Amino acid sequence: MRPLVIVPTYNERDNLPVVVAKLLRIPDVQVLVVDDGSPDGTGDVADVLVRESDGRVSVLHRTGPRGLGLSYIDGLRRALRTDATPVCQMDADLSHDPADLPRLLAASANADLVIGSRYVPGGRIENWPRRRVLLSAFANRYIRAITGLRINDSTSGFRCWRREALQRLPLLQIASNGYAFLVELAWEAAAAGCRITEVPITFVERRHGASKLSARVLVESALIPWRLAWRRRTG
Image (tube, rainbow, N blue to C red; front, side, top):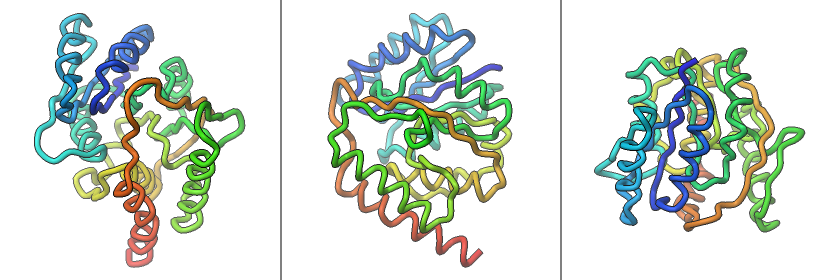
């Protein structure tokens, strides 16, 4: 294995060094930070981590339109230009525990996509208000009902991909740019016949910084299942 973990960042200067330090404790893991022009200087922090990492950390400084989906597409395309496998995704805000990564890596031996799931037996959420938990759980049921996806946590951003699976996906055709990007990417994987499995994780509310959840993101997330269902119907 030559695992590469993509960590998208926007205003995560306090969290990024902690996440990277924990990831580098895992043997052979490489880290690609994709900074979306953070005004708080996260990109400068990432440059320092690159210099201190003995070649295990790299950074992609994005310019132009911002968004989680655009950051991930650029990061995934960069990863596919290396020999890394699996290619993993995780948040920079410490909501995903790097200590869970070895279990996702192990599961990738028998799956094209492994999702770190809050909604399978053993999965948990800590420190979220009850209304946020209910909203997230409802969103995933809503997505399954409309799209037919057989994934319990299609909005999870903690994932490991076999590079061969990523190479089959139409990354440049994915239109979603917020958290809906995660749903659309999972849908494309299912449509491509990828073997998808979920492993339980404990998701913890961020410790520093502000959530990126906005009204625009919520609207896009509400509409994406219908767009995917329509695409399936029309072929």
